[in-house]
Length: 249
Image 1 (cartoon, rainbow, N blue to C red):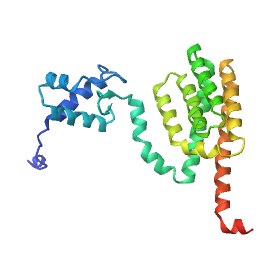
Image 2 (cartoon, rainbow, N blue to C red):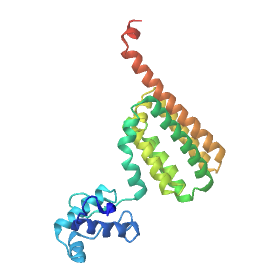
Image 3 (cartoon, one colour):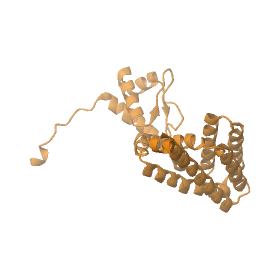
Image 4 (cartoon, rainbow, N blue to C red):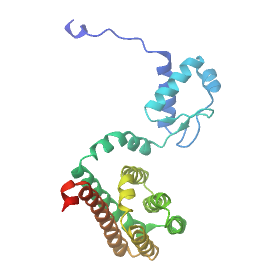
């Protein structure tokens, strides 16, 4: 009887059964990413439960990263790969406080994106090339507007990732780009950094458009190294200007 000595079995609450049945429908693909769940009334009628159980179940699904809730709208199923990356956002940003961790993430991004540029040059469809080119045009139009340039810069890189037709790569690159948002905003402060970044974007797109995988990889590598250098130069200049010894020298 030793094995029976333990915590008493607790009765499951009704909302947990509702959440389980909804999550099963999502995981099995009956309700796909981007689609809304049935209305609260429809769920209540289908499962024979009250509004409180339904609402608690929806909050549980949101906590698990399966749905997105917003006031006045039906819950929407979230893409699972993106949901996984979103859960990593807080610990990732905490890690990036340490300079050595930031350098490692920059290196990881470089390894990932040069491979994505090579793959896009090999396999991008006409529609995917058009999406990359549209992002490039918006990036050019944003020159002179720092915030807009950072946004369109990120979108250009994301469109290249999407040309690889892999939801995990798309989610990973989007997450890394968001984690490095401050990196971009600081790097772009360097004189001429935005103009140089745009020129590299043009070169990357041209290599992808012509199917030159070697050139696409090489230019992406060069572009990201230049971006890293601009970031650390700006950081070091800021540290030097804040150092009383440096100011008095």
